[in-house]
Image 1 (cartoon, rainbow, N blue to C red):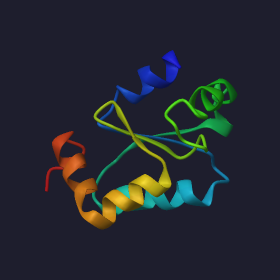
Image 2: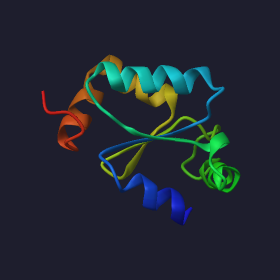
Image 3: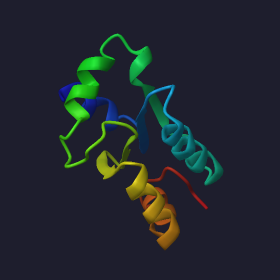
Amino acid sequence: MERVRDLASKKAAVIFTKSSCCMCHSIKTLFYELGASPAVHELDKDPQGRDMEQALFGAFGSTQAVPAVFIGGRYVGSAKDIISFHVNGSLKQMLKDSKAIWL
């Protein structure tokens, strides 16, 4: 979990994904469309990915390990949560507050 927290704190927006996950792709695309450039860590391509996936799985009350989204170093949720934040308008403000986007 220490590596996950370290990586999550290095950039304003961080997404832990798997390259084969369609929801991960959707969340990354959403962030890019909002003007953010998140750090993306694809767990299936990282030598320590399996350990990080185990740390993420259930660590934050989520039933799935990816996508795991951190904004401003804080875990904000998985795909379902991020989509909800986007629909209610709070995702963009979170990204602004963390300086992941400026407009």
